[in-house]
Image 1 (cartoon, rainbow, N blue to C red):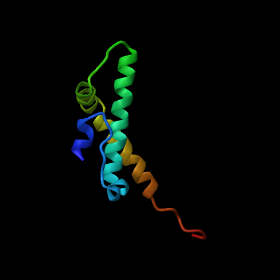
Image 2: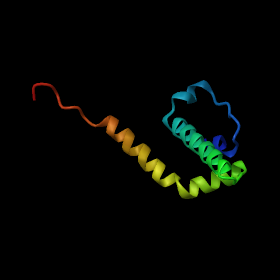
Image 3: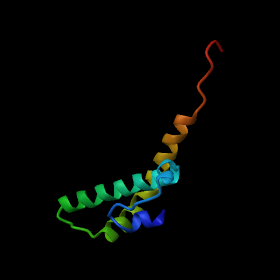
Length: 84
């Protein structure tokens, strides 16, 4: 999975990986890094993929992973049974 973040280009993975939660989280992180790189470029700060990835991972990864975990946990909370 690490190789997915090594390059800005699309990385082909076996079809069975597309449903893997770790792949999906890694893909979401890659999209966030792409957005960060674009935003910084719009500010006049063009970054290489490696620079953008390293900065994003250092500054945003922890909060983003926490956000994802909270979102996933919210979806897994038990729904009270009807008539209880």
